[in-house]
Image (cartoon, rainbow, N blue to C red; front, top):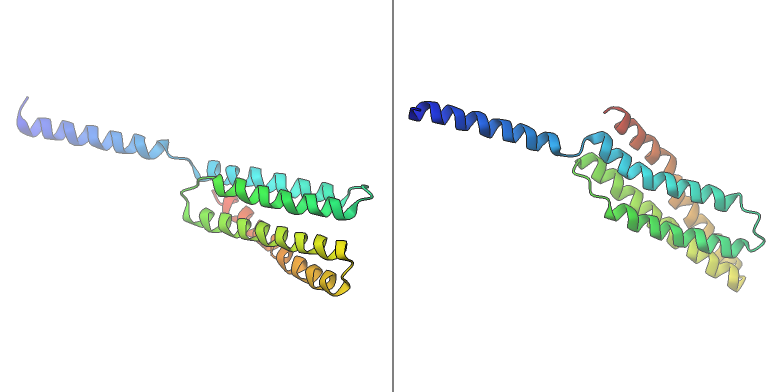
Length: 146
């Protein structure tokens, strides 16, 4: 085989390998699903906690706040390459951390029966959770545009 034919063959092989390697990366849909799985679990737990008939409401709130920290950790462990998804993932993590922290502060204030701290913690908790709806909508719109 001549040198020019060998080069053409090598270029063709290199191109084929590059295409195969690129196609082996996770699709946007797969990456969206990885984040969505954690976010949906967190939402399901939050709904269950809010509907709970447990008479220990403070204990229930404490468990919910701790679970948000757990979900933030799970989301941190999710590896995505899509830059937009990385940004959304970071925002979910931040929201879960802030909400969990505010929930723990509310628990502490309730146990101390400190009305000022309760009011302040409720305000902080409300601010932390206000972004959830728009964040979920933004995530869904981006992922549906796959």
